[in-house]
Image (cartoon, rainbow, N blue to C red; front, top):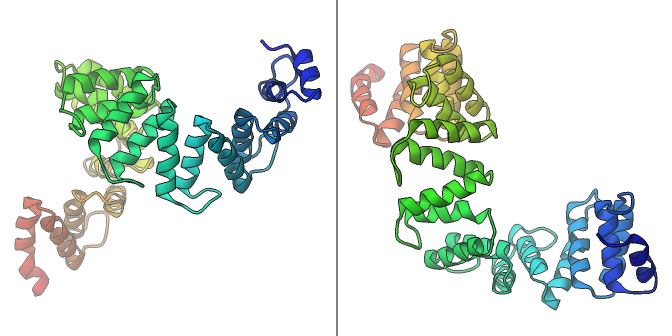
Length: 356
């Protein structure tokens, strides 16, 4: 641990590194009571003397606000740029992020790419992952999946744990590299063990479907549960499905309802449709046609096309809502146009009734 008294003495004598170190001690509360205003004071002193690490940290305080100073994105941009131009790779990445998101400066994806690429080439693993994203989405640069894979793989090799999920996804989808389910499983597992909720959910799906590994419903249940308890709505719906079907765990309709309801309230449209089914059939909860209509309608509003047929059926039968053949026709037609053959059949039956 740094000696507070020594750093204070050196800082007061004009040593910019000691100024930065003193700012860190105040920021972390090491050897002295935590004081964000004093951290800001000493970071600013060191930044004005041209110390790039302090310039970056000062910019972080300005960007986040509430940490010794008011939020000020223009000043955050100013100090990130100062440090970036001196060659500090973390600041280069942060400056690129401001350009990408239009924070403190006009949005400019080409400049975002320029600075994030600089940081990646200068060995910053987070920037390498971010650069992979830019190549993957074609933001500020022509889309290039092979380069996306290269940089995300580079970030993983350089120890950035949050890139493990992205690498697993590329191996799973075969984008930028040959599809390899075993490697997808390996990297999802790594990311899942490091707390990535999307990886936990996807790992559950690989075990459920036997992709890249032998089918194992107990492990599928374990990983879905992990992600669900961590608030991931897709996993909450998947866990509810396992409770509903009794796969990997004992069948329990009350728990199925609990988790599907969680996912629906967390705005997952497939879960909203599934919750409507549970209310319609009275599974795990008392039958309630009005709530069935509410949730199926919600799923449709949120873009789940396969709920369109269900909504049409409720309008046709007048369950949970007033019977309305015109609306039934409309939603059957939508579902039919999206290729749902049951809706196509229902649409044919309804066509003449609507015309009468």
